[in-house]
Amino acid sequence: MTDARPRQHHPDDAHPEAELPGLAALEAFAVDLARVAGEEIQESLGREIEVSYKDLTGPLAPTDAVTDVDHHIEEVLAARIREAFPGHGILGEEGTRHFPEGFEYSWMIDPIDGTQNFVNGLPFYSSSVGLLWHGRPVAGAIWGASTHRLGAVVYHARSGEPLYFNSIPLDVARPARGRVRGLGAMPHDEDQHLHPGATEPRGRYRLPWDRRHVGSGALEAAFVAAGIFESAFNSGPRVWDIAAGALLVQSAGRHIWTTEDDEWLPLVDFGETADDLIGWRQPVLMATDAAYARITS
Image (tube, rainbow, N blue to C red; front, side, top):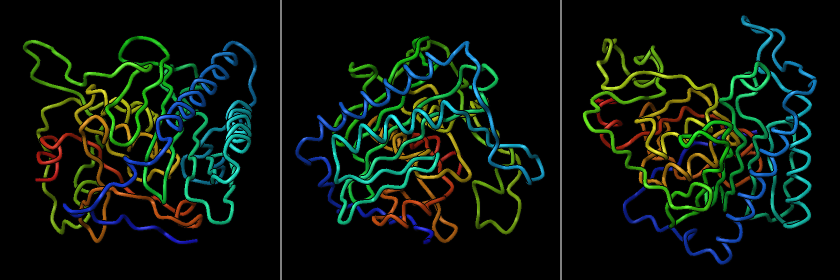
């Protein structure tokens, strides 16, 4: 298994994925999958669920909750993808590994991102469906249990098009007269995470926003895309955590970076092979240009 490294973006790097035939239909399919996942989650509310934990030996064990609902949703979505697109790859958090020979497209599924919130009844969780083409995000849909419009709705996008919120283009500029401080999902130990190559502490930053931790990386990405958060940081997401969110963030005119050789570089792809995708795990920073400059200066 390889640890895929981010590929550096160059100004003349073409984006052929924006011209892919049938991309609108693929986005619509991703939206349908996210809605199916959301319906399954909502139907499970109020009934008994089975909970187990993946980490039983760590210092904070038990951690990393998983439920029968997670497994069921992933099975349902994977079956629909196999039926509609038998030549596409599928990678799911709960164990789905399906990579036909010569695959170009691959679906990244996180059936419930924020399972610990879901288990405890805190309505900050999501279901994430991302589509990659040769490892590049080209379409994504995130169903959120809580959104900026106070309802369970899908954020979605495809390459070359704006961010959508339930099929309606979303204006990411949120008017708020007199607002000085915003919000961001940022760590408190900024020196360690945001300056991986620093040899000396840089001290506490006076960032012009208050910190929030949602507990769902996909939902935090959607909130950055929608203009709710100025920025969000995740210290080690897997590709299923971030594939859809990366595309949403880019479609909204925000940016996403990861580290290579102690330097933040734009995230372009997750690698092309099955091993690349399965093994990918990198720090990720999503932000506006202004927020990124302030954070990393």
